[in-house]
Length: 264
Ligand code: SF4
Image (tube, rainbow, N blue to C red; front, side, top):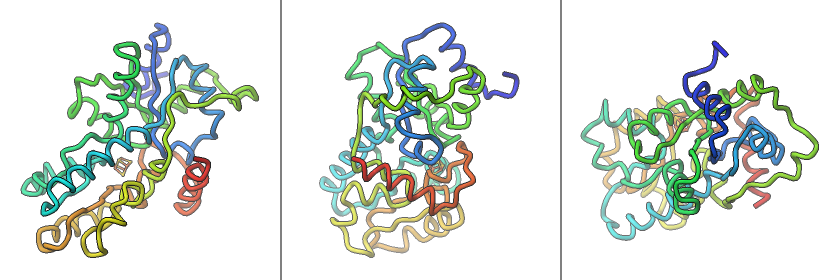
């Protein structure tokens, strides 16, 4: 218990007080966990509902496409990655005006949960990202989201002695998504939103990794033809986030996401 993060301790306290809760599961979960066993384990941990954050990503895509439709002449930098958002705010403030003013998949999912079950559940985001903890507190505090990492969840499963059971194979999500299950792979936003069909090659760019991110941000205003920069801070995308532990190669992680996406 001493080694748990503050957010993991908060979640344990919610579980112990039998708070009604909704788990919002980030789309990179197949890198670390088995489906559908994970859903059953979450329910036995105390979650009343379990929803795919990929469903919120569908809203993110819709909002981005609506913006590009409304302002075809403008340039946009995608904003679902809180590390990139903070890098721009702190180091490239002149580019902040280009960040797409849309919901991230996490905040869009939280809004969907609120709409479907008004004021019923404590919303808990579970994902691969440390900075989502800051996004939840700083960027969308009114949504009252507790953000934890996959590593936090594994620690809590250990603490609560929750292991997969054969009956967990019968568990299913309460809210599902489809094409946006590709979101955690670099380029998943462009592919699932249709940006790759709408724009020509020089008009959009897909990049990931901190070194390349800085290079491309430095060049962003020098490329007038570039309209959409689909950018994630972790090399390869969220499948390589700091809040997940995996010995798998990036290729194998990518394949796990594609396998899960192909079940849609
Ligand atoms: S790319 Fe990395 S830092 Fe960005 S949202 Fe994904 S896990 Fe978080």
